[in-house]
Structure formats: C-alpha cells, structure tokens
Length: 102
Ligand code: TYC
Image 1 (cartoon, helix red, strand yellow):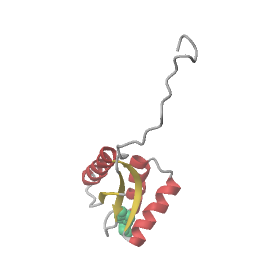
Image 2 (image 1 turned 180 degrees about the vertical axis):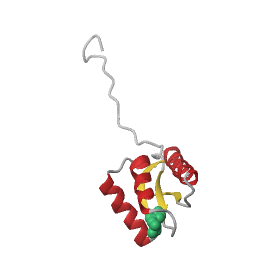
Image 3 (image 1 turned 30 degrees about the horizontal axis):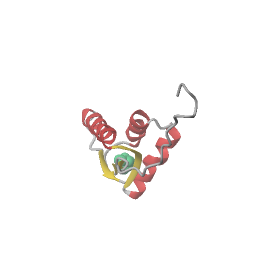
C-alpha cells in the first residue's frame, strides 16, 4: 500500500471450503504372456522410472498380481492408462493397466 500501514486491511485466515482434487493410483496387472522386458520398458517410458526401479515394480506385479506405477490427478492417470494399453496392443501384448481412486 502506497501510504504505509495506516490503511492496511487485516486479512483473517479462512477455512477452505473446497476439497483437494482426488488422486488416482495407476496400476499394472500381471498376466502370463507379456514379456518381463516389455513391462520394464513400459515403466521406464511412461512412468519415468530407472531400469532398477522398473525391474522392482515389474517383479512385484509378477509375484503379487498387481503393483502401483504412480499416483496422479484423474486426467493424468487416465492418459497414462490409455498410453500403456495402446502401446501394449500395438505390440500385441495383453498387458492390463487400470486406475483406482486413492
Ligand atoms: N508374468 C509375466 C511373465 O512371466 C511378466 C509380467 C510382469 C507381465 C508384470 C505383466 O504387469 C506384468 N512374462
């Protein structure tokens, strides 16, 4: 304010009435046919994992049936699912990728 503190307005903190947007987990599901190397490449390409991180996540999915690749806002999660499924079908692999609210 140009004239210093004389005219200052005290702003009181207000409780926000809006909820933060929900987040979604993007998950890979195991299957018997998709090659391990392909899953590792998917995790590196679409989820920016190192080869080591990608290998750990791939092995978790392989052993436990599913695993989380990342957590994102809804539109980003939906895009990741679409990219993974489309890339997998293009290479004729049945890899499944799904999203679920956290
Ligand atoms: N189970 C697969 C195999 O033995 C590997 C695999 C891992 C497939 C993770 C899908 O999401 C997956 N070749």
